[in-house]
Image (cartoon, rainbow, N blue to C red; front, side, top):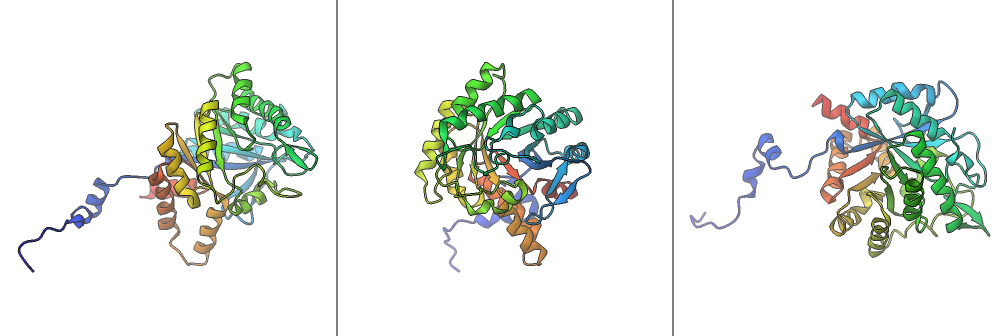
Length: 327
């Protein structure tokens, strides 16, 4: 080989584990995670969701034990989803003082005051029709739904939620909820907006877990078209202008371009939602011995951080926390 060489020696910085760790640009830690929990009515209930191995419906009496385990693993935040026994046309359980999420919030804060409670603010788990708002003329009435979503947010804040996370994708929801929270004395409570939420097929297992499948039609008139990119920036910009403190992009893995776009366009913290379909595909493949689950999950979550996410909502949080502890 000629003594005159002018190519770059990039492999120098990959020569050992220690060298690679020294120059690593993105890492995943438990501080990045928000762990979802599905809370149900009744007692002594811990039932695995069939389409989501390792994810459970959990009754309130078993919640303290779960919270202590989460805290011991170094996970600082959870997001609560309620699965009520009774539903009605206007989702009354979502904003009831003794609603399932309100009661769960109080249990979490009594058990672990330092654990951050993110309250998912939507109506779909509580409506008999499974849609995220009030139905008029066989369609979701945007403005009528906003009033009930605001009531839900205030009730969750009163119960002790640290962060309100509206996921309904109604136009104007951040502005209306921000106004309601401020008026009720909760100016200090931040809003983690599901600003960019696509009408995705990756939500299938979640709808099993939350029992929130629409009883007619779909959610394409309010959730976003997966083909659209620029629209995401319009949605994100509107929510920031209306008072959002965090922006969620959902799903995460198939929308890393959107995570990067929103990261480049805004300065608020970005949250990637590693959704149920992404979780279940990996779990199924791992159970069949087709993939290295640990390596694949860490790579996937790192890709979300690399794309620009500051935080990740993920059902893998406990698994990853255990792997990091073992390391």
